Length: 374
Image (cartoon, rainbow, N blue to C red):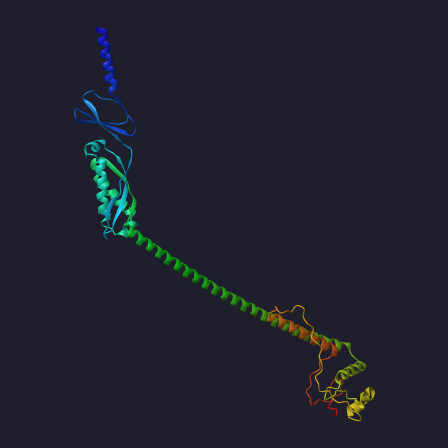
């Protein structure tokens, strides 16, 4: 019988021991009272409490908590009523104050957040409220943190989750937004048109400048080409005269050249004829005495213009050739014609007008003052 009692006592003792052994999880705290009076706060780990004397009053989570409060009706400074819901992030930093500071601290924090939000929004207008969320968050966090220090709560962050204005205000805001976007579109289109016009004008300006510079360079090159071609022609003539002088031409060659000149001149178109000073011998030799002196049937003078050979066409000139190219081709053709004429005559002969006086000389290449009979 005594052994049974001992066993019972041992079982009761073990039960009491195991019943009063507590393991506090990480990030939690237990508030302990002794005979109804606060004793201590248990942190994470193994603890043993006195049976029937100590008791666990409250188990508190030390983690940061997210409190999503329902929307609160608030009135702005310009008398617009809207619904705003907020989210509060907080944690318990003192389990004793959290337990004995206020009855139901989370409900107290919710009501405090609602009243603080109304106070802050009441000082702002609608447009300012919609664009000042960061400012509202900072003000609410400061006010709530200061007010909940006595409750053992640390408010770490406050966020405005949603702002819901009245439907009529939303319609007005939608129209305002649409008008603002249309205004921006119009401004952008006007700016784009302006930039396009300016760019086009600048392009035309640069094109005209480049065209003028190209025309100037073409004219300069054309002038230089003309000057060089004239210089080459006169140099060639000078070289020809020098060659004739060095060749020491005799009287027979000079007479032959005179006859060739008479052949070109006496074609029936001139009102004057040119012949050397030994006129009698030349007239008798050529059989033109009657023509020269007007005896017998004289050939009627042909006053029509002497036909000129058709100029050679330049294969490089077409309808797309510019004015500078056409002028350059004309200059080249004139130079070629002048060279051929000088080569054909053998000497430079001046153009004579009708009835122009001629000086008589003994040189067979000079002219005499003898007129034909009309």
